[in-house]
Length: 202
Image (cartoon, rainbow, N blue to C red; front, side, top):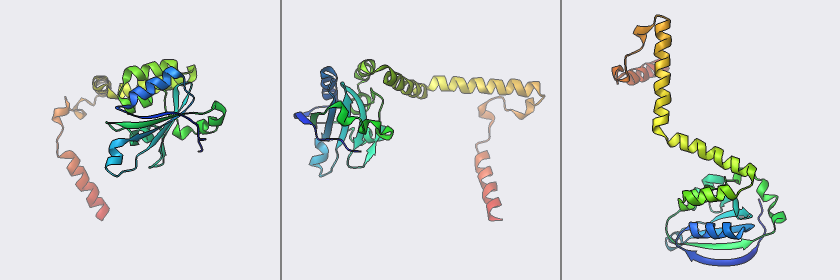
């Protein structure tokens, strides 16, 4: 992937990435921002990341030191503390080929969420994105929200247990299922492991 050198608009140290992402969104920048955490420089480490934008909405993220893109790339330079942000403008046509690299693409609100921990800015960015990318971001956010909802997951597990009990009763297998999870023998897994190990040794 090649990103052409753009016109440097500004380069400054900011307290966090949110201010930069907010300004780029408001300006509807097409180009890229190079993020360079200052704490890493003080420790003698090389940490640098690039996020590209189209009309102010993030498209790609890439960790130049680890050579990793996408969300994993974002996490490589998502650090707290002062960060130097260099904002560059580039023609959309010059970024077209790079923006086709699916492995490096990120949902519109992901940089705000990962780099700045700013859900409000993430939502604002998502709303500013084209329709197709807006759905892409919402789909991922919905999955993440669901996985973070322990109550919802437990409710599904509970419903599955109830259905299993109903089926067992229907088939005359009531004695097979324990009345609750507490009836399980904590040593069962260890015994099973021992059996497996014994089988392997034969």
